[in-house]
Length: 272
Image 1 (tube, helix red, strand yellow):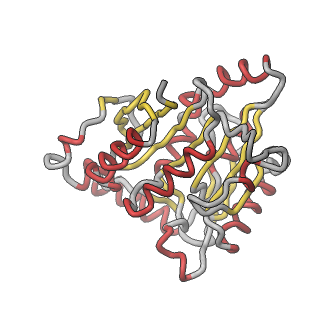
Image 2: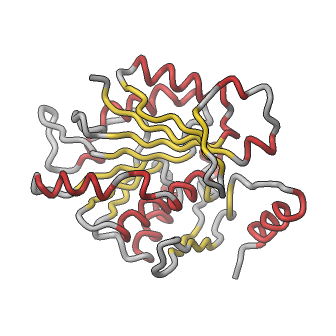
């Protein structure tokens, strides 16, 4: 049965051209059907303790659905060709995973990948995230780890890592994690600690424009200072193939309705 809030959101979009930026409510069931077919992914929308409501982890964000709809843009198949030649699986990290939709779908879709799925160490949130991986039968290759940005990355990197030889992840992914500019520095520190030191390693970040263009622009400046190079900054219209280059200059001209209909897909690599 559909969640009443999802039904309301669909009705608002139909009647008033109102595009929701989230789906579901705490404890509700969310079902995702991949465009590529296969069985649906069923998720419980997480709840958190009251002290952590500011995480906004109690919904399925449009950006995570957008990532799920566009997995091919992560170029995982291309990346696994390289890692298979190296005799190892492709290692993927999702930060701020919430209900875990992208991580779960990636694990179900691709062989030769090991996914580490993380969010803030709130036990209710992490318990739901772990339950979602088990319900969708991916827990053997999709590891759930509680993690606070900026803290010691050893729990993420696994027991085979050491301080002198940290392999890192081939792909680091996050959807709608930039809305709070106060956390940008520790988020970027986490990216620096976890991304594999390789010219082939990539960060994929997707953010809705409810985040605010000036907030995103501030984040981009910090990424540049941190030693990352932007390989792609593309604005994409949700539910459409429309694309355009990122520009902060649209901030004053667009209204709330426009902001809800676009996301920006950002790809970063280590600066050479």
